[in-house]
Length: 111
Image 1 (cartoon, rainbow, N blue to C red):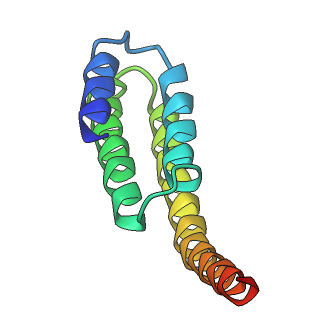
Image 2: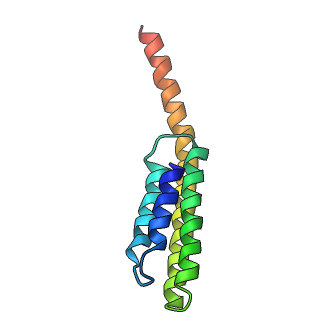
Image 3: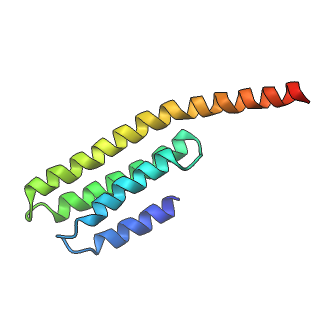
C-alpha cells in the first residue's frame, strides 16, 4: 500500500500547479483508507499520513506563488480529513473487535 501511495505522489508531482481535483481525491482516499479498509489501525494510519504529508509538501512547494488562499484551504482540508478519519477509525476498530468476539461466543453457545 505504501508503494501505491508513493506512486500516486509521484504522479501528482507532475500535475500542473493549477490542477486542484487531486486534493479532493486525496481527501476521499484518506477516508477510504481509514474507514473502509479493514486492517489494524496502525496499518491504516501509516499510508494515510504518508499520503497526506507528501501531498501537503507538494502543495506547499507548487501552490506557494499562485494562490495563497487555495493553499490554506487545501492544507486545512488535508488536516481535517485526517483528524476525522483518525477519530472515527480509532473508535470503530475496538467496536468491530467486540462485535466479532460476541459473534464468536454466540456461535460457540449454539453449537
